[in-house]
Length: 440
Image (cartoon, rainbow, N blue to C red; front, top):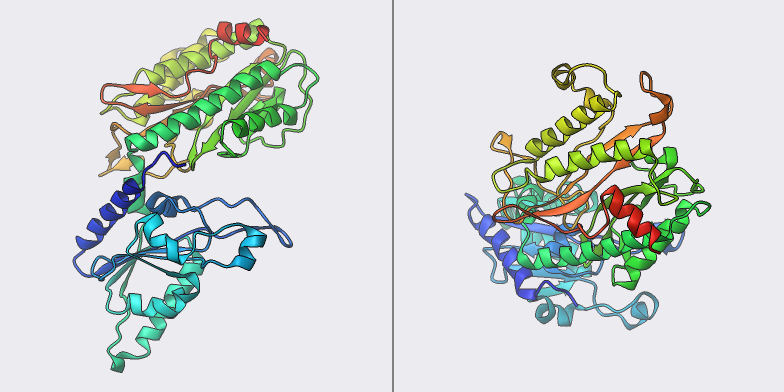
């Protein structure tokens, strides 16, 4: 059962309807659901709903379309798959047209089979159509309907003249999470925490990366998260220096570190945690020294999180800590001022500090507003994930550091007076990690 009540989905639709009413001329929105994707021949990948469609409906079936038409007698209309006893035996139950109005609190529901036939009527006389521009099949359907309207002006038909991407407006809506959304994300984070805790204790030399990944997925499923929010990264040794390493096929070696980047998807919302720890349960002096630099960078970034601050401020705090740390370890030689001006840290910290988190792991929402870096507001959720990566063969770096990749990532929600770390339950200091791994 969803933690997000039906009335909240309705409120979101009302917010988008209000936006459409504010347009200078008549406007509607057309939001499609996802379709099943073929994996091979007649088998499909597990279905995953389009995030914007889910955000507005909470409806988790493929091949549907939501219409928001503020000037219509029935402003909220849903086209969905009709009930079909034969198809449901093969592919699973459907809500059906008859039950959709009450179940989803929409004004009217129709069979998706009628969509193309009724689309010209929906578009006739409308000035602006808001729809996602990254959906080519819908684009083709809209073009066909518009061409039909243009071909019969003597019948009083008129086609839309403005075709507007709805993604920016929906992204702004989705960026600030409601209390119900944060509750779901808190649970996604809790499940992700349990999986990382288990992974730390199940890791040992001789096991394979894919076995640790399997432990993580098992823990997800046992707590109601039926899939990861993204491809699980289990990179042992030098594999940790590959940012999006997902092969997870190598054996874990005594003396190496293991970097795990994994998060559960729970009721559509993503968790996203990274921890790096020793395969044998004990950091070497070299590993611990570099790990402490990354940890200090994350702590410096976290200290900036509050309303009115911004991601660039957090990024700078982390980058300064990394620059100081690399100088202290002798990896960078020279003064802080010269290395800060040269942005020398970018050779080692090769990605951004974090990203928005929500229905998508790299969630929607701009990082700039009105020409300025977007200020944090209560209800925003983001990751904080500094890292240092020194792949084998990196020039001008002592070989004792080669092959080490370290990243530490947590999920944080901005609150009225600071932030809440949703994923703090995974051991993070070197001492906490070693203690957790030894007490199996």
